Length: 64
Image (cartoon, rainbow, N blue to C red; front, top):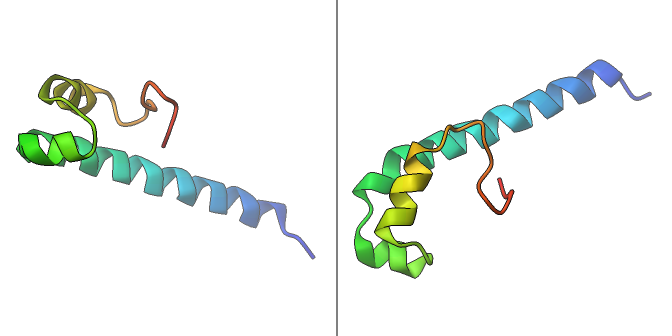
């Protein structure tokens, strides 16, 4: 039998993991080398903008 409350908990956990990953990315981006940024297709300016973006807002492409 499916328990609706458990589904809600699973959704909240997924959001928490996604937010933690976004926060970690924002924390690490300022220390990333220009070469590593180029490897993932970001300029220094884009990386700085991403680091300033609040962790609860998805990126411009809407990706997690």
